[in-house]
Length: 143
Image (cartoon, rainbow, N blue to C red; front, side):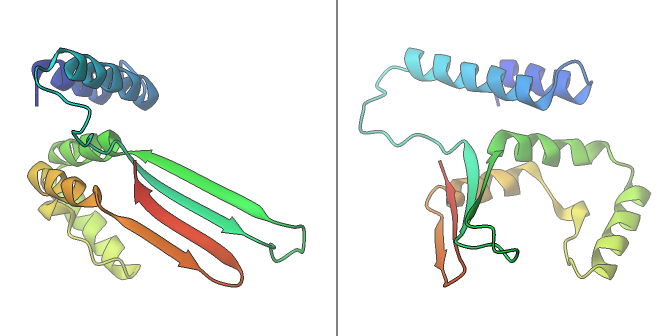
């Protein structure tokens, strides 16, 4: 990670900027790097920046017609969140893990590491999930 991105994440962690402002700054840094990178051809595949979930229901339960849900999560926000877990005290992580497990979510927050998230995001680049049913259409993809 370059120094400018680190500074943006530190400002976000300190509460000096909002997540939206951090996203805009990091996007601008990414555009600057792409413009100044030598040998960046038009055939190069860009790194995904968002995880997108789209749900289109043809008719909602109340019979009021179709509805649409469109969620766009910045992957940079996920990266920042994982890095912020290093600031959480171990006893708090243990309690959070216990509550998650009690709720049926078997995730160990102590095992979240930035390098694992970067690897996951690299694999998300090729993720596309389409679910069509009589009631709704669900799409999950990266862009």
